[in-house]
Length: 427
Image (cartoon, helix red, strand yellow):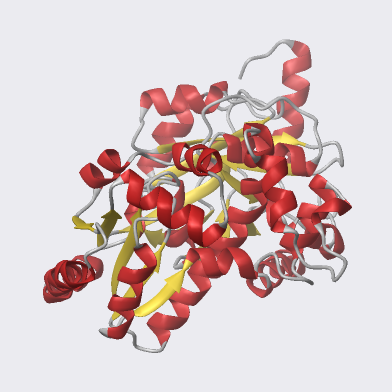
């Protein structure tokens, strides 16, 4: 299936081009439509907005008051960030589900209309990215007339996106829309023919994707209950043939940074953060340390602020786990779920995690949770190769879990590490 990413500047005419692509046979997914769907009454997104911004965000009939919400986030970057942390992950999950359905139904071409495609680093999801742009005065006139915005509101919203010249430079194809509909259709058709005519090449590239063996949860000596030096962790992972590992030390990130410096192609920088609820929450693809503490939601928001992936480890472990009811309440904060942890010896708890993740549309990951070198790679995900957080989540949704639970004796190693630290023994 050929995947076309359709984006552009605000008011440039993406929807018109989307209409044309759809009329020529594309299966169409519009992120703006999905954004409206995820905040309909009864959806977790609407409740999260009410909890975050107050009851004043709802009309008397229980629907979202978009004007009131726009007034709150207008010129308030922190409020906008909190809103995006609610909306964007929900839209991403729904978008992935619809693309999977289109593929299963035999769609040859799917076009995904995403205003923030570049801003959200989604380029890797597509075989071709098409940008629609238009003169600023034309765009401003269209948007203010159709949406009832003031020129100041348009300028504020437009400035939050990449400028047109930057999007055009990053695109595979550009369509210029200066209100000449005949020219717009002609340009769009040329792009359509160019992309779909190259379909065989795109499909051949997709079939040639390499599979990686990935362990998404392990520790180094930066954790208080582990004595494995980052260099030894990296060497062991390479020796057993892993292609990527996530180093996820408890409330620390220096071990992951050290591992990445040794082997940047291997190591995904992560951290396993203890929340105020006593739960663990992993951030993947992090750039900064996240201190221990903060609620589950606050830690998740910080992970996303860094552009990372919110990954829930061992959600139903007897000591560090929680309940389905709690997870449902923070569902909008989650990107992926650990469905197999090699240190959990009751298979029902791992199965419960997989069941919940799949029922709620989340990709399922796996990891050794290694605290000893011998545990590394005990459990892993075999998944398509990826580059960056967005592509990682897509690849994870196509992955499969391999491996088995570790021996019960591995917990003795963690206990010894804690004792050794107290005694001043380094290894």
